[in-house]
Length: 324
Length: 126
Image 1 (cartoon, each protein chain N blue to C red):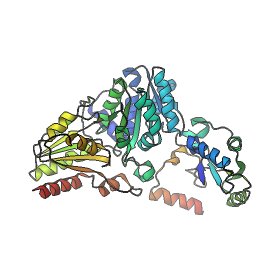
Image 2 (image 1 turned 135 degrees about the vertical axis):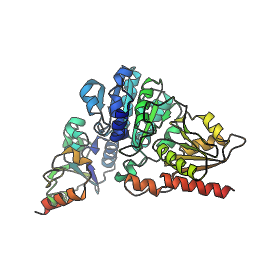
Image 3 (image 1 turned 90 degrees about the vertical axis):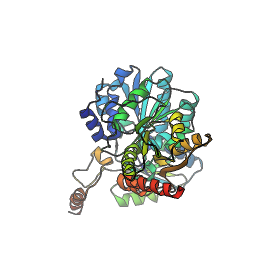
Image 4 (image 1 turned 90 degrees about the horizontal axis):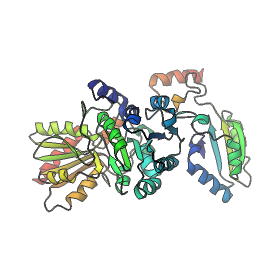
């Protein structure tokens, strides 16, 4: 079994979320003997070279044909296998949306669809490869469990959780390479149960994926400015941890942070939930807004969208001022 | 329209190919950049599309095969459009003219630094 020791945590972080997936995959046949892995010309990119060498009869590269990959995965699932299928998050969610709807949503087949480089991780390739809508698409499809790990440690954990969970899963991998470390060792990863990483009473910051790290840094800045800030790692976006959201309704402000469009993402999920509560504070949704950005480096794209800790901190301070 | 040979793995390419022939789009030319490499390696290993000429012809296209680095040959082929859409299979070498890039799959997705750029340009201009 994979050890969640500090050396591995550092290695996974250096490899980034795709490489961490490949490392976790090496252990999958041990976690679940029925696991097979499919990819669409992204074997190397998904860190699966060692997996292919070790388990050649469990790795299927279908070429640049993502829709067919989901179809092939459905076939494997029907035959009792547990297929993991990898491609860029943009293609997994948008190009394959109908195959996902029919095979994962409608038929409920236990396909584990891995959306690589969600958000801006391959922003250098331009808008075609940015994935700012995948959460919105997947949230709209019933039956699909949507996991969005905060770092590479949580990614390895999420892969293991996905392998043992009975239904269809969309695993959203995000963040730069190297990937900032949130979890220095083994971490809790229970589907539908968010991790509270920092306690606070004024503001509740609910973040997901790569933005958890930025949220924690922003919380430190807020604490310095006298704002007691709670940080929640919402690693499961569907089903959402409603208890945590209900609890956050007791704060002065709820902030959601995601490397995704504010339309249909984590912010929307939280908004839909709190709209049903009798009393709730204002909600500040931090994420991508408006048009597709031009191609750029990860750091530049994040800053441009105000998704870095400093920008998040400023937005929260401004919001708190506006309210009073 | 320019297509990669790896890109021809996509089903949408063949849906478009069928529609273009059905509607006899004789003003449509597809140049297929056949460098025989995609992200994970040689196209024949990742997903073997075998005889590209036969495939495009079977979809109802006129097909020509040219040296993709011979610009005049490509231009001349473009004049051959008849009553059907035309597919020009351009045989190319990925990274042509740059010794350390030629036929190296990693350059499918490689990032060019200033230093690498200078080296490559020096070779191309030599």
